Length: 462
Ligand code: NAP
Ligand code: MG
Image 1 (cartoon, rainbow, N blue to C red):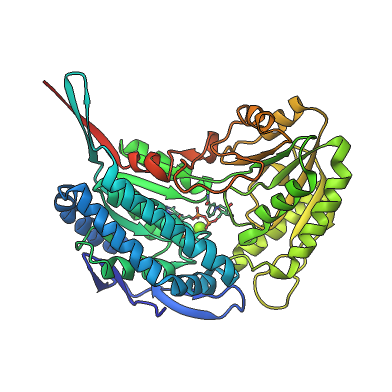
Image 2: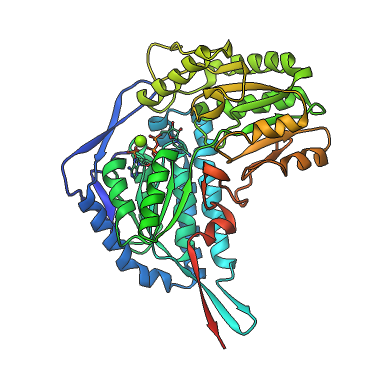
């Protein structure tokens, strides 16, 4: 993948308004692998105009034709899946097999699901003496992070296009090459000019200009709670739709009847995959006091085995963030079982898989999102306490419950204040709504729930 020097606006690569660029760094060897333009408010303005101009035509395109275009886009992603995986590995640092299976594989599934939904969704319904039309919200400003660079783009762009909206995307500064590759795919799939536009740039410049642009009808943001709060406030002041997918501090609750070894091993893998940079990761493991030391031993062994298979975190900034959380864990009295703040390699932004035991629910490492390969194991005495601890953060994005009987796990899961729960290691479902309770966000992505975020209703009475 060769970096483009321009912005993808109105169906073509156009020179940026300014001259500043962003260096893209490979987190494995710290080498600069490309440069992309750092967009400004002027670029955002051009892109929003292009999206606005394309809106009436795309909104009026029959859903089955929009579906066919999305299927063509999915097919291009399939044809270029190796290049996608290599690009994500180059700028995010994740091991290639993970990039192939997840970073390339999941967006293909999601794009395919929206090709299908666009063709089958009831965009018109009868309610008594009314006909209700589900119409596109309009021009969407999408702002995405770097941790699942293509998935987070597709999880916004595919439903927006399926709904008949047009989009301006501002991807993360750390992973712009994947976003440029996506723009190439849009061009190759022959989507009409202006339905998708890309402005690379910095969050406080291009991102903020997009979130504040008066001609954007809906802002969909994934990233940190701090930035999400500001974007929500800006959107609220402008009476504009907003979707926020923010952080998490999810609990992996192992009930005493569960298969302990399986629950611990799957739990450790869940935290360590993508180097812990997953908003829905189960970063708190809750274990009954009677099984606590056994679980700690199993987790330590599993994390050690992970040791040399784990990729780096995305940037030097993230590495120092994660390290300071590990140091804080030690300072607040948690027991470091494996890993630690020291660099395991001389080059690259690597952090060793790290496991803390004797973590109490009020410690910083049990409350704040670390976004690195760090697991906290917390002890509970009874089920009531487990519920209290699991629900005892500002977040509520995901979680897991393990028990011998499914019904026992389901009963527990129903008491959790969280948007997704995996029962006994349940599989990822690209059609299930994904999103947060409490400060983990507003709105839902994926499947038909993700589609309705981009629709508004108009009722005609007869
Ligand atoms: P971030 O700053 O919230 O980045 C997310 C996106 O928002 C990026 O495209 C970013 O651009 C953009 N942005 C930044 N400031 C903005 C502003 N003022 N207005 C509009 N857009 C803005 O997150 P981060 O700095 O990459 O990561 C920090 C922490 O956030 C992580 O440690 C983690 O805890 C959390 N995080 C959560 C998720 C998630 O999936 N929920 C994803 C990533 C990070 P730039 O790329 O230029 O900053
Ligand atoms: Mg940032």
